[in-house]
Amino acid sequence: MRPGLVIGAPHIVRYTVPMHQTVPGLLPALAEFRRGQPVFATGFMVGLMEAPCMAAVYPHLEPGEVTVGTLINMTHVAPSPPGTSLLAEARARAIDGRSVHFDVVVADHAGEVAAAGEHALRVIDVAQFRDRLAAKQAQLRHHYSADLSSDHQRLGRQQQKLPVTAMVKDGTRARGRGLWRGKHLTTTRERKTTRQGAKGGGLLRPRPPAGMTLTGPRTTVDRRATPRP
Image (cartoon, rainbow, N blue to C red; front, top):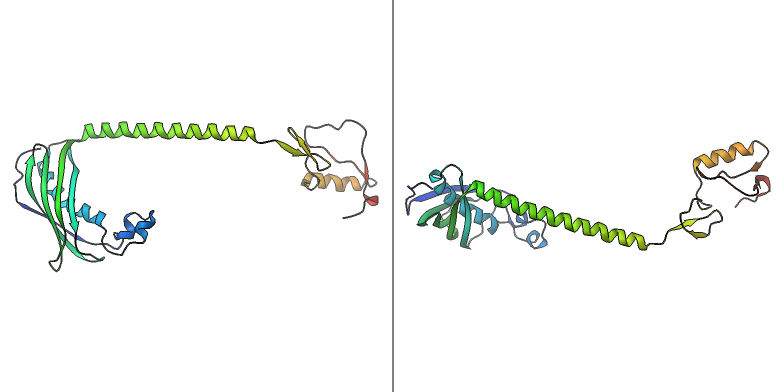
């Protein structure tokens, strides 16, 4: 960081509270926040307090440097509904090497203080930060892959424990890899075959599934003699 940041000099950011930055909009996935009031959320207020501190330091950064927040100590003392104009003012209080400490006050358009506190940020090398971030992301991917593999193995063990059953032609259950369907399951192809067989004299022989060959005596069904259900 280059020298030149003046202790006590004011740095100001103006902001108007938008409709979507109320308490319910901060973490809408959590019921605790969805039950909140329609005012500027404290989490968004923290971000607003950081903004003038960043603006104060940015002109003094070297190429390849960025800032990260390291401390926030604040009080949120007044509500700010959507549409409120806020003024955030930060003044550098101390510079400690690559860390800068600020006093911050946020007031509304009427001059009422909405929040106040202190914020510290640190100047870091962006390349080193990205290397550290990439290492952490790799750990997360490895952890996720390990969990996914464990889930697949557990699912496979559960499937192996399930009994394999099939419906044979007479509707009873049989273990193993069943190839016949139950009486109530009839494909369109079988129904078509049945109609064609009826034209040849009324004696029908059920067609087995593809790949199967009937062995043993032929079984015929006289449709005219079979009572309808």
